[in-house]
Structure formats: C-alpha cells, structure tokens
Image (cartoon, rainbow, N blue to C red; front, side):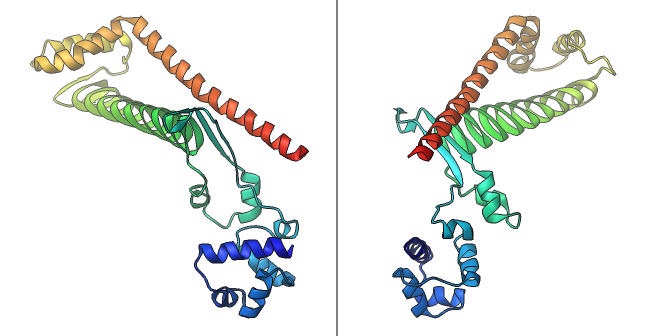
Length: 293
C-alpha cells in the first residue's frame, strides 16, 4: 500500500502545488512523516488514512486495495473524420461516485470534471457532436435535458428548430415556445399559434397581437388553415406573406412534408441512440476483457 499511497500523495501535492510542510499541516502530521510516506516507508494510522482518503477524493477501501477509482466509462473510436472520432461515449459510473462522495457534494460540479464527449456521434453528460445525446447536449442534431442545436430536442432546448417543454428558436415547438414561429401551449413569436398565442400575428384559443384571431376551443388544423388564409386578406406586408404565411399554408396543405420531416427525425434519432448502444457494448466488452486479464 505504501508505494500506491506514495504515488497518490505526490500526485496530489504536485497538482495543488503544495510543499510537504503544507500537506503535513492539512493532515496534522509533521513534514518528516509526509516525506517518509512519499518514500514508501511506513503507513498512516486509520484516522489519518480517513483524512487522506477524503483529501484524495477516494475511499479507504481503494487505498487499502491499491485500486484507482473508475468514475466513468469511456469509448472513443479510432476512426476519425478530421479531428473528431466517429463515436465518443462517456458514461458516469454513479455507483463509484456515490461510494466516494456520498450525497454531501453537488454532483453537477463533480460531473463537469468528467471528459467532454466530442465526436461525429457523441454521448455523455456534456456532449458535442454532429449527432449529440447528453444531459447538456449541442451540435447539429441533439437530444438532451438542455439541448442547443440546429435541430434540438430537450426539456429546455434552443436552436434553429427546437422542441421542448421550454423551446427557444427560429421555429420553436413546446409547452412554452419563443421564436420567429412559435407553436405552443403558451407561444410568443412573430407568428404564434397555440392555446395562448402572443405575437405580431397570433392564432389561438386566446390570441393577443396586432393581427390576432381567437378561435375559442376550435384550435384544429382546418380552423388554423382558415385563420391563416383570413390573415392573408388583411393589411400585412407581401414579405411576411411570402416568407411566413404562405409557407405555413403550403406546409399544412401538403401532408407528405410532415411525413418526410418526421421520418428524418426518426432516422437521426436512431443514428444517435444507435451510437450510444454501440458505445455501451464496446465499454462492456472492454470491462469484461480487463477482468479476465
């Protein structure tokens, strides 16, 4: 244990730029005692060992068994496109984290220290990629609790096209949505459609805006389409009609566009989740091999 402990103490002291005397004062021992431990001679008593384990953010069991704690499992493919691996997966080892830290610390600050998953397909607590899946996720297509992307899905999401309980984007869909085009229970946008719609052009059960149509309880496709056609007859600019109103009418009158969009989202989701599945299988395989060796 002494050699393992010596290595851990030296590494900690160098990382935190401490002298042996400074480390000794933290542990309430003499600098000669720290020097002796770092040379691999002798060992601390159980009470000092508890302090060392806390200082090193590990457990006494890990120190006694000379075991490096594994706080995360990682798979990174060797195939690269530019500077990015095809697949990068980082999965927190919550059992080890709880065993080491208990519930006394903020796990957000702990998880932030884990490697950031970056790849064409990336999955992790913090994830960035073309196809990205994570608690905090960003990229071209992303799924996460907090998602920032061109096409994003999350509890809170932001992007060119965003879907979420709270959605902010050029085109936003959600319980609460804010965007140029907002479709939501509560929507705020230049063109807003929803239960409560607020905007320059607002169509909803309750609408508020310059051009507002309140439909009562009749917020269905036919009523929305009729409302959009009615707004075209009002004094709106030709640019707004060409860029917002007419495309919306065309979209609603052409079901195959919705089918294509939904199919594309399903395909991108399968690629992203499939990447996570492959990464998990590689991690499990690697762990099995390490146990056999």
